[in-house]
Length: 428
Ligand code: BGC
Image (cartoon, rainbow, N blue to C red):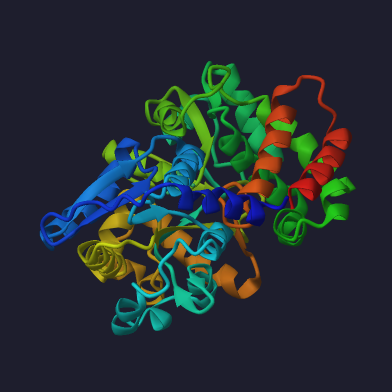
């Protein structure tokens, strides 16, 4: 059964349970399910909550801990089965289409806001297509994250005698060796499947280039998934893994980020939500920390767009609240303050083209410049590890194979490439 039918069967069970609408207090209550629970993420989402409450609505926080959102998605599915979906939920990429096809998302509620706020003109088509279902907005995009970053503590680099940020995999290994020799953790990394695959996709991009990345992780081409370039990428991944934090098994990404911030580790491969932790710790980009594209990927941008999907609700107050959240979320003020806290860049084209005006730091300015350039060059590619390239079922197949590969001391890259092809085929 493909992932589409799996979700549909899951959700059709919903009719067995009574619908449980939330009582509206104030102008209306909207429950929002999301997984923004680290210190920096919470600071960002609190910006939205505060504005919505100022507008007279009640924000019911449906935070579900767990980086990458796998636990939040499980909770969301059981809520849907129980006939009790929240007003809004953080859903991304192709999953938005799957949820919409179950009939649970509201195709009307955002119409008037999208028209009056001119969303079609504000958003790149690639972005608006992701959040529309059959031409209607069913989600509001809040920001753009770049995933292929390397975060560096320059003080630690200096102590280990490393002069420049690594620009190639060879330089990355050389830096890793020096960090190890100087007694630092070379690479802060939490061994959770989504974090393993965040590193995997960066290495695939570095070794196989944009075309190889696209064929393997977006188009899911079997020959590319099982071919010699993938074997090479897996071989390099195994080497990158030798620099990972030995205490990182099962560790949350933000606790690993803290090791770089506190000077225990030298680097972390992570999307730019990692910057939210640096910001929350009052550290300054370019001075206290450096952000560079993962070695060999500076002409590419793996993107990850956070968006809040709207679920059908009976209560008119909730619908008004959903509209208010949508309106606030794409407004200039929120786009600025949220992204500054979250580590991302705005989703609005006018802002991406004028980042200096809004006081964004060096990392965000680089991200916006690269986003616009890579959109023209073809270097802009959806992140597999962050639900933008495939369905969750296919993503799950990648996660299993990649994490087993990293953890199995005897794993063979050629065998693993074959396993990858087979696992992806059966999950499609
Ligand atoms: C989300 C980010 C979040 C990160 C860590 C990503 O998949 O898009 O918003 O900060 O996971 O949880």
